[in-house]
Length: 330
Ligand SMILES: *[C@@H]1O[C@H](CO)[C@@H](O)[C@H](O)[C@H]1NC(C)=O
Ligand SMILES: *[C@@H]1O[C@H](CO)[C@@H](O)[C@H](O)[C@H]1NC(C)=O
Ligand SMILES: *[C@@H]1O[C@H](CO)[C@@H](O)[C@H](O)[C@H]1NC(C)=O
Ligand SMILES: *[C@@H]1O[C@H](CO)[C@@H](O)[C@H](O)[C@H]1NC(C)=O
Ligand SMILES: *[C@@H]1O[C@H](CO)[C@@H](O)[C@H](O)[C@H]1NC(C)=O
Ligand SMILES: *[C@@H]1O[C@H](CO)[C@@H](O)[C@H](O)[C@H]1NC(C)=O
Ligand SMILES: *[C@@H]1O[C@H](CO)[C@@H](O)[C@H](O)[C@H]1NC(C)=O
Ligand SMILES: *[C@@H]1O[C@H](CO)[C@@H](O)[C@H](O)[C@H]1NC(C)=O
Ligand SMILES: *[C@@H]1O[C@H](CO)[C@@H](O)[C@H](O)[C@H]1NC(C)=O
Ligand SMILES: *[C@@H]1O[C@H](CO)[C@@H](O)[C@H](O)[C@H]1NC(C)=O
Image 1 (cartoon, rainbow, N blue to C red):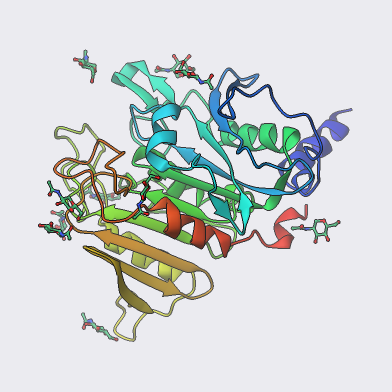
Image 2 (image 1 turned 45 degrees about the vertical axis):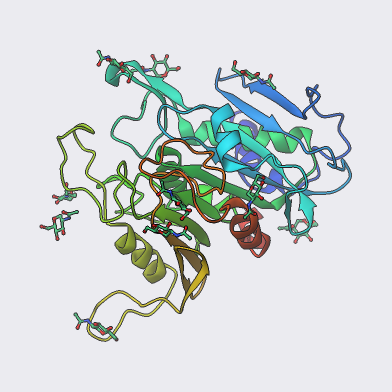
């Protein structure tokens, strides 16, 4: 009995997702805008959006989007634009899920995630994430090679943390941390151990006052003990090294393989090696997910960018990325 249970558990983490379990299912009882708040057996909750042109006989891409500390699923849906009608990855309508972070009453925090010194460590955010993927896959027709993780701020740090783990890099095909909170000493920076080269698209405002572009040494100031954050360009370069870009002969980190200015006040750095890092540096933008409408209001002095990060950059990047077949083997 124990052996059978163990087998079942293993299968549900890997091979079971290469099935059509949720295809041709009735799905959930959605509201008129295609949404439902799901509560899992663990008590954890997420907001799901199913587009009106979802086809139950086709494997769709799915994107999880994690809010920042103090945030909510509903606000993450708004600022990320991932429920926008007509949005496509690889030509297919996207199923979007917005998980809700746990509170940490000890630190007077709501809606927090692992990878931060203020995380609620008595909940299991990794298991919750796996449960969300399973809940969607069991009830909707999902392409298991096209499940993606994204997030903002603490949710971006959590996304970056999942890009560093053996298990989650065999679930998500690619990662999109936006203005990620990269706390010193967390796996988002040190001890990173992904199962493969990892495709990452990321964006950071140069005027970010919450998670400064150049990092923050102060570990005990306004943001609390342990909230030193690392230098963002250095974090990007270290990913390029992890993805097999050659270090220079003098030992410095690799230069980007391509530098362009696709939008006003925006520089795009690409390191294209065993997997691609695509990084936006946005001048005149604060701690915001880039949108032309300033949908992310945490970006003082400026919430507004000259482009929408989700469409086209994120959807075009994810369209190019699929999980390798070996990730489905036990
Ligand atoms: C989900 O829950 C939030 C918070 O209670 C609420 O504002 C929202 O209307 C709910 N959405 C749906 C689709 O039920
Ligand atoms: C962590 O989250 C759980 C589940 O919501 C809750 O029961 C617990 O009180 C939280 N811990 C703290 C320190 O807030
Ligand atoms: C808890 O946080 C809220 C909102 O950030 C703040 O208004 C309040 O003063 C804080 N309470 C304590 C005891 O720090
Ligand atoms: C943090 O300290 C290191 C080592 O002294 C220094 O190189 C770096 O520039 C500092 N970063 C910031 C943002 O002050
Ligand atoms: C970052 O963490 C390392 C290792 O724990 C430590 O040596 C270093 O002082 C920390 N830097 C900051 C700015 O807190
Ligand atoms: C190391 O070499 C690269 C080119 O290969 C150069 O751009 C960089 O400035 C050099 N760094 C130092 C510290 O000499
Ligand atoms: C670019 O950023 C500068 C400040 O860095 C700002 O004054 C200017 O309005 C921005 N340009 C456009 C076209 O958005
Ligand atoms: C914010 O940035 C946008 C895009 O670069 C620019 O058009 C706008 O003028 C800026 N607003 C402020 C208040 O700086
Ligand atoms: C950004 O998204 C908004 C809302 O969907 C849309 O109205 C706007 O045209 C988009 N901006 C660009 C430059 O595509
Ligand atoms: C999934 O299963 C199909 C059929 O068994 C197989 O052809 C494919 O290689 C597997 N892997 C993926 C990632 O689809």
